[in-house]
Image 1 (cartoon, rainbow, N blue to C red):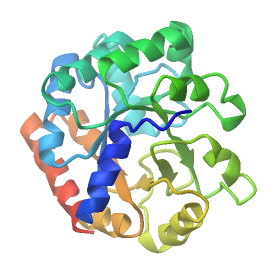
Image 2 (image 1 turned 180 degrees about the horizontal axis):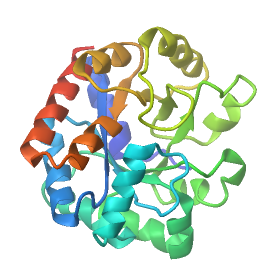
Image 3 (image 1 turned 45 degrees about the vertical axis):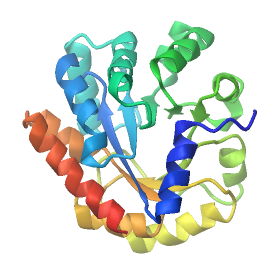
Image 4 (image 1 turned 120 degrees about the vertical axis):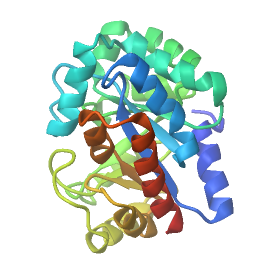
Length: 267
C-alpha cells in the first residue's frame, strides 16, 4: 500500500499541530450548472473548508436524501458528466494545490469508465480520495485496492448499525479518514446529537488511528462545533446544497460555509 502521504494526511497533520478540528464541505459537482459550481468550489478554501467533498452526479442515487438527489438531477439536467466533475477539480488545482478533494458517489460511473482509466484521470485532475457508498469491503478488489495503489485514499462510511463484529472489515483497508454517518437512513434527514455521536466516535477511534469525521444532520455553526468537539471534524452537505437549490448568490453560500467552518474550528 505504501506510506506516501496524501494531501488528506497532510491536512490532518497540520490541523492536529494547530489543535484544530477539520471542517469538510460537500457540494454536488455541476450543481446548479458547471460555471456556478466551479465558482462555489473555488471559494470554499477561503471560507475555511479544510477538505472538499465533490459529488459525482448519478441517475440512481439510492443512499441520498431528497436534497442531494435533486442536486444530482439538476447537475445532470445542466449537462454535467464525470469528465466535467474532474474539470471542477482541475479548475481548483490551478490556484490551490493543498486543499484535498474527495470525490463521493457511486461505483457505476467509475465502472463504466474503467477503473484504471478513471484512477489515472482522477490522479491527474488532483483528486485525493474516494468515497464510494455502494462498494462494501467484500468488494475491495474492485476499486479500493487499485485506488490505494494509485495513491488515492479510499474512505469508508461507518454508521450507528456498524457493530463491533463488522467494524474491523470496514476499517481494514480504509485510509485518509473514517466518515461516521451519525444518523441511520438517508442524508439530510434528522439532526445529529453530540451526546449520541461521542461514544460511537470513541468506539471507532479505539479500533483505528485514522481521524473520524462526522456527517449528516449538521446545519448550524453551533451544531458543527458540538459535533467537531467529540470527533476529529465535521461534514456539512445537505444544508449547503439546499442554499444552492434555492438559487442563493455564490457569496451568500460562501458566507454560510464560513460560519459553519468557524463553528467547527472553535471546537
